[in-house]
Amino acid sequence: MIRRFILLVLLSVLLPAAASAQRIDSPYRFVEHGQSVGAFAGYVSTGQNPLELGPKSAAMFGARYSIRISGPLKAEATIGYMPTTRDAFAVDTLSGDEKNRAFLAEADAEMLSATAALRFDITGARTWHRLQPFVLAGGGVVVDLASLTEEEEDLPVDDRYDFGTSFAGELGAGIELYLSDRLTLRADARDVFWKLPTPAGFVLAAERGELSRSEWVSNWVMSAGISLHF
Image 1 (cartoon, rainbow, N blue to C red):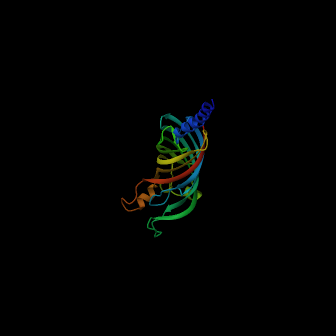
Image 2 (image 1 turned 90 degrees about the horizontal axis):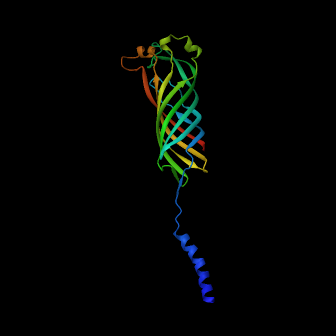
Image 3 (image 1 turned 60 degrees about the horizontal axis):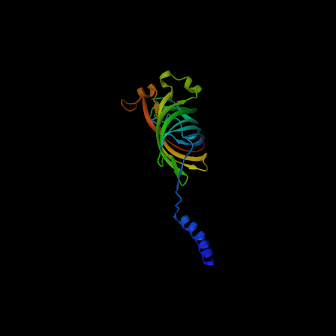
C-alpha cells in the first residue's frame, strides 16, 4: 500500500513536469481584429526643383484608416496636413542671379494630401514577438491650400507660382508594435513623390532646355503614430 502511494505521488509530480517541458511557446500571435483607425505625426524632408520654388521641409500630422483584405494584405487610407512655407520669387533677368530670379517674400504653404495604399504584412495576419513589419505602395493627390502673397498678386500671370493639385505616389516600409490586442504603436518611412510646376515666365527666361514646365521630386517622410483596432 505504501509503495503504491509513493508511486502515485511520483507520477503526479513527474507527469506535469514532463508535459510542461514538451510544450513550446510560439513567438507568433494571430491578429484578431481586421480594421483600425489612428493618428500620426512626423517630418517631411521635401525635394526641390532647380528654382527651389516648392514647399520647405516641415512637420506633418494626420489620420489613417486600414482594413484587412485577406491574409497579409491590407488597404489603408491616409490624410496628412503639412503647414509650411516656400520662397516666392519674381522673374528678373537683370539681377545677375544665374536662375533669373529676385526674392520677393516667404509665402505660406498648406499641403494637404490624401492617399490610398496596399499594405503587405510580412508576418501575415499575425505578429512576431508582438511586432508586425510591413511594406506598402499607393497613390493619391496633394494640394496647396494657401493663397498667393500680395507681392505675387502683382506679378504677371505667367510669373506666378501655383502648386495646384498633383498626383502623389508613395513607397514605404514600417513596423507596428502591439501593446495589446487593440492598441498599437506604428513607425514608418516613406518616399512620397509629387510634381513641382515651374511658371512659364521662368522657363522663357532660362536658356533653351534648361528648365521644364514641371519636375517630379521625392519627399522623405518619417512618421510615428498610435492606432486602435476593432
